[in-house]
Image (cartoon, rainbow, N blue to C red; front, side, top):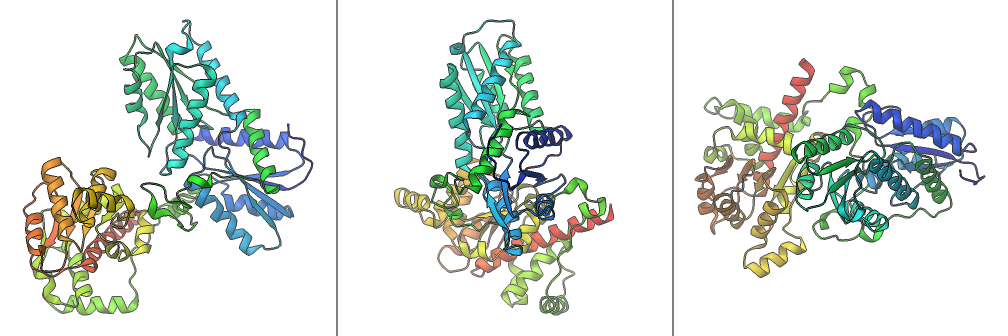
Amino acid sequence: MQDGTQQFGIVIAGHGSRDADGIREFEQLIELVKERAPQHTVSHGYLEFAAPTIDQAIADQLNADAKQVVMVPGILLAATHAKNDMPSELLTFAYEHPEIDFHFGAPMGLHPLLLQVVQERIVEAEATSTKTVRRDDTCLVLVGRGTTDPDANGEVAKFARMIEEGMGFGASYVCYSGTAKPLVADGLRTVAKLGYARLIVVPFFLFDGILVKRIYDAADALQQREPELEVLKSGYLGVHPNVADVLIARAQEAIEGRAEMNCSLCKYRVQIVGFEQQVGEPQRPHHLQVRGLFEKTTEAATEFAPYVPHPIEAESFRIINAGRDWSVFPEAHLTVLQRLVHTSGDFNAVDDIYFSAGAIETGIRALLRCKRVVTDVTMVQTGLKRALLEQLGIETWCGVHDHETALMAQTQGITRSAAGIRRAFEKFGNDIVLSIGDAPTAIMEAVRLIREHGWRPQLVIGLPVGFVGTCESKAELKRCLQVPRITNSGTRGGSPWAATVVNGLMIDAVNQLSDRLNTE
């Protein structure tokens, strides 16, 4: 139990879950925190899915006349939620209430008290077996949540190494339940081949939930496939006095100005290999669409606004619609085609556009499923409508200016645009929409990778402008039967055209979602 006597309000910000067991355990932990820190006013809120939401938890502190409020992330590691989403919630209140002293605490992290909890869980798991197996004949499999932040993923590996050496395991192996690789099932298949007599699978999670249940299911499946290999399932951290004490300690550190984050390897502060574009990215929430989702009414939860053009934009499209006979084109193509007219100022621009069969429909599905657009140059990337990207949750990537792209172009004798496409092939695989608006060499590299290495982007948009290699590259793309594609013939095109096609697909995607959700 903590001995601090200074009184302040503590907001414990949880992630939230679709699983009722996870919510129940989080709230049990909150009660334990209250018991162990009775001098503080403690409230809690969830980032996603559940209620109360974080803003409601902060409001509860203000209603209780708290003069000092500290928010502590009730999550293990510092990734996007702790670096962006949760601070953005607190900053909103700080701007609105300058008279209140707000603080933000560090996530729980690799605290020694948490190492002790994992130690307990492992010993408990070993006690369930009737076999005697030496630790050096046992492989520890630590399963993290997995994020897009390499710093947070690396912390899981560090935690595993500390447990491995501290408890004397023969080896440790790290895998993840999502986002990062290797995924659980792949990791377990790999570990099963290492020759150890026993595996202990440890979910590095605070609470029960859908992901923990999937981890246990994967362990059970491995045990059935490999009956000679003993697979033990350890408990997660759970409701434990040590976990409560870590939260209280993080709150006290924040009040005292001692909250520490690992900023030296934070992708938002320094250039980390492969994540250079995210340096200086502003703190903005990514969770608003699912905040308090399960407490909302069905109508509010499924509301998805259609695209509404600016009045001048609407008038332009009225003129475009009346400016030529559009009945000769398939209806599915009209949004993209009319927007190309709007971008180019030329009604004849659409006469040269080529769509492979089903390209529009495939592109819309790809945007909704894969949620990533790769471009050859930043002009295409910046031409995409930000409001639509945010509404659909789509990420964009362009590697043309990255250091690794420059190195690849120099060492392999290709253009930076082609090197950027090659990096996209290596980095993202097939689950992208590829939009090329500037470089014929980018199209030629994409076609080469598709034909020779089995790359299958969900849709390739190739509309560069110019006279050197432009017509030839677009002709090659048109003949590339392995992937859905949108291109044109001739020298016309450019980055605005390539961005316009993606914008048209996003508008159709938003409108289709709106129609579907509001008619169900």
